[in-house]
Length: 524
Image 1 (cartoon, rainbow, N blue to C red):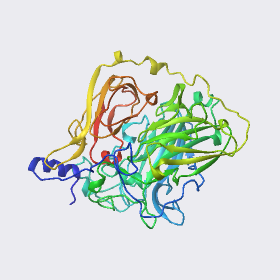
Image 2 (tube, rainbow, N blue to C red):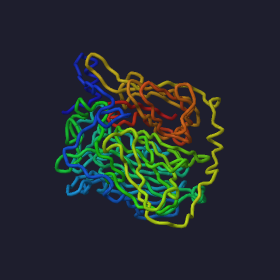
Image 3 (cartoon, helix red, strand yellow):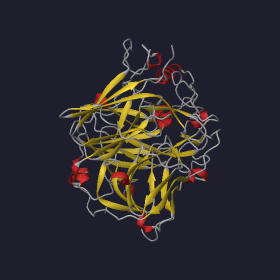
Image 4 (cartoon, helix red, strand yellow):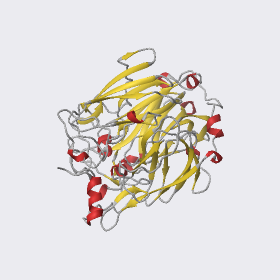
């Protein structure tokens, strides 16, 4: 019987068995400047940038609807895609495509998504940023099993039940009791989130409401989701990833050099390498998601639009801001979302505008390109007031009834090295916090010796400070992920409302998450 990493660590610490997990010697390797991780070089010949038109994921239609609920169906299965010219890439996709189909829903209208598993591995789907009941949150050991599997031996020690009558589908219920926002869904299987997301298990979930609909922001074809991620490719075109077991059914983890994180050398947007998008000389709204395992981006436009700002931010992780914020550049950590408007009227027709990554070099310094190809009448504006943020503005430190501290560091000694929180690797049976339903707490988040984007399930929070000082402009609005560089700390104000039950919080560097940088909290 194969033994889980957690059980092995527990026995190793108890019995003196060495679990040697050395880490890469550098947190910035190759073209990974500003990111914690090591670049995995592709073996395939890569695309030339700006040759592929930007694809937009299809919107999933409901299978049926009734008075209160829309019902959707997805199948997680193998698919084929020509990502690099002339080469075929096998993807693990929702409905066999990467990114998966976009789910669009309305605030306060319930949806049910039936996820069926036709992949050769267990899966669990998490709606990232969703205010979701615990049974539908995608807890890491709440698995949908592959065909023919009745017992998953390597789950021993994870607190999972015997799978004699293993289910092959699950109905995820999303009440959508939250504001309009750009969310996303992705795999969340314990120990294997990194490689399974890398192979394609991610998609957009866009929540709309009447408040947002009433705004004169760009709409329709000028409201564009952009899923940015990096990947590497084997010589025949398959996704290249340094798993210890490529079947993802045995030993979890990555090769020693990639313990800090896996960085690809190819930048994809909506699944296409360095794509190009033709635009009119008008405003466009871009819902930007960093879906990379470990890579951070500092986004900028080249050329910049004269003396004006490049991006007007209108929304963050948790939806609309109260008022727009101007940015010349945007730093975006893994899993963060920035909803921005770009005004192409500031450029002459025939201008080519490149979305740059100032943290990259070589090809990873580019993300995609826009070509201003036509004139059109402007029909949108960005109003000076976007949303009623009274609840956000009113929430203050005086509302907190408790303060907690969580340190995100390496753990273990004597050759036993993991990533962990407060000196402990993840254990599904250990509860690290029990906030009361309706309570407000301050959580101090401290990271070392690497950068960590910290994500809390269920809740949104308000960033109070960084390193005891003012927050950054990119911390504005309701957040569910805060990106911290090595040695940095942040205080966040969290209101635990919505549901009672067990949830997790973790680093969203997916290799760190798989290597146990995760913990439980239970709303009681």
